Amino acid sequence: MVRIHQLKNYIWIEAANPRQAELDRVIDKYQLPEKFKGYMLDRHEQPRATYDAMTGTGVVVIRALASGLDSAITVPIFLGFNDDIIITACHSEEQAKLINQQSQTGFSLISDHIFTILKGILGPYFQMLDEVSQRADNLASHRLTAITKRRLDSLTILKTRLVYLRSATAGNLVALEELQGVLRQRLGMTTDLARQVTQQLSDLVVEYRQCQTMFSVQGDVINETEAAYGNLLNNKLNQTMKFLTVWSLLLAIPPIVSGFYGMNVKLPFADQEAAWFGTIILTIGLMIGMLVIYIGKNKRH
Image 1 (cartoon, one colour):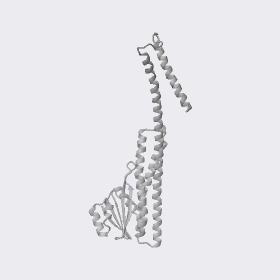
Image 2 (tube, rainbow, N blue to C red):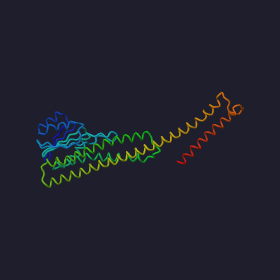
Image 3 (tube, rainbow, N blue to C red):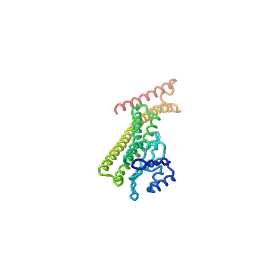
Image 4 (tube, one colour):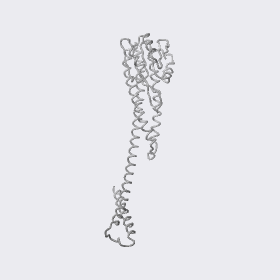
């Protein structure tokens, strides 16, 4: 669906999940670069900012959140612009609603319209950051002695989601830094306006960089929590293996003693009626002696 909005000083072309035929008509009518059609139709387009010198049109593609933390999917939002036109394109109703909400104000400058949309895209990332922080704190605050498979699965999923989120924010930041050069080439501006636009973009870059940094911090928290879980599990495994080793040695003694006295050879006390009591006492004595030696060595270490 494509809608044309005639605003006070420029035209806003709103495209939500557009079809190729619709974009062909828009591109032909407003003399926009043909290559931008591919950017608008590609659901996997990566963040970028570029400038077409022949038509005097700039473009920036930003990845926006399309879902909650359980999937952390991001989708591209396309912003194309020149001195008279701004065109936005997205592929979901949720993103179309976000763009529309950010476009309700009567803008006098295309640059203000662009920056408002870019700032609106950043909002859900900070909401996601709060959710990530809450989950990370919950995982880190649990008693380490109460590690369960469910918590380990949650930790792994959260770590994976953070990889996607950090990648998206890093790509968006690169696109915004490229946008600085694009705006210097386009949007014929006076010196004062250029200074204002540069300041607005710098502030936006700072916010995106802050978001990227905070995701990185949360990633470090998750990594440290995972390392703590791993150390504890390794320690538990070592303790279990030590316990099993000691018991395997202790349980090896009875077969040795009974094996000797089960042979058809002459052995001390074997001809006495209570000889089997002697084998039990000998077995218990050897087992106690081994435990005493083991405990003594552990105390020294």
